[in-house]
Amino acid sequence: MRDDGFTSFRLEDLTAANGIEHGAAHDAMADVVATIEIAKLLKRCDEHLFDTLYRQRTKRAVSALVNLDDLTPLVHVSGMFGGARHNWLWWCRSPGTPLTTAN
Image 1 (cartoon, one colour):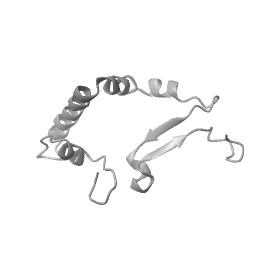
Image 2: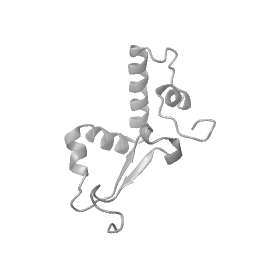
Image 3: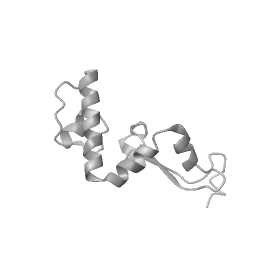
Image 4: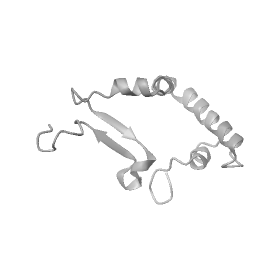
């Protein structure tokens, strides 16, 4: 969480918040090591979540979760949506379904 109350997905912020050394931010090797340390921390803290995310690392695995025929709810988290939207978006209808007919 940043000082302004918004969530940050920046690697240097994630490492600082989790007590992981990342002195040379934006150096390729330092960023790789920091990412590995974040992954190790996640696995140590919540192995089930780590395993679930690891299984969903491919386009094929994620595509299997998206079911537009049944309008299965899906939450997508991304820094692209911005802090004002809390970096998440619900998908609970087919993009082609008008809002007036979605339940």
